[in-house]
Image 1 (cartoon, one colour):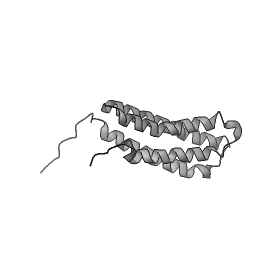
Image 2 (tube, helix red, strand yellow):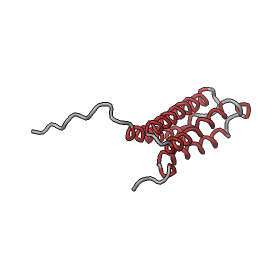
Image 3 (cartoon, rainbow, N blue to C red):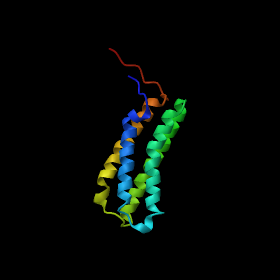
Image 4 (cartoon, rainbow, N blue to C red):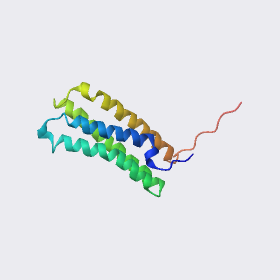
Length: 130
């Protein structure tokens, strides 16, 4: 059965879970990061499910893949910001473990969806039969 809406995509659902977790995570960051790392992390986290949804709403497959690619970029940005928050001493590594695992789930799901939509560049070789 075909999907009726982007909200049925597991990748969108997981990306929304990640966005909510990031909003909660940023609440523990220092107040003076309000317009710095906090804002950047929230923006990147919100961009991931937003781009998945926007791509789904596009009429052309290439546009869809383009927006999924933008979601991947936002995810990489968010991962960098999580690492930065730990390296800057603003948060403990343990507090990012579940976020990191969720981000990796989203990454795998995004990659699988992109692969399923992208036309194959090279045809698969024919099966060798004896």
